[in-house]
Image (cartoon, rainbow, N blue to C red; front, side):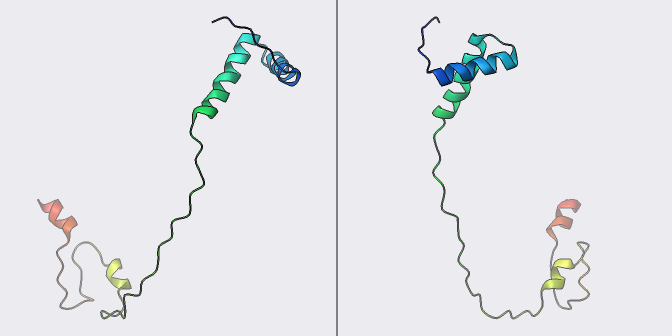
Length: 97
């Protein structure tokens, strides 16, 4: 498409500097600049979001005692440290199926 543009002096000078630095045609530099600028203009500006906050809730006293070691138990069913605790490991059940 052929058209005539009237450029401000500072814009014309900036285009000329870029054209010389890239050793490209004025048409290529203007098209590239317009693509980049229009791409930024068409994307919807996002308003800064309010940070998401999670409120802490007291669940009361822990009746099990220290549960730190429960997480460290091996997945092969070694629960010797917790007598009377029965737990079917879903990972083992899926592997056996």
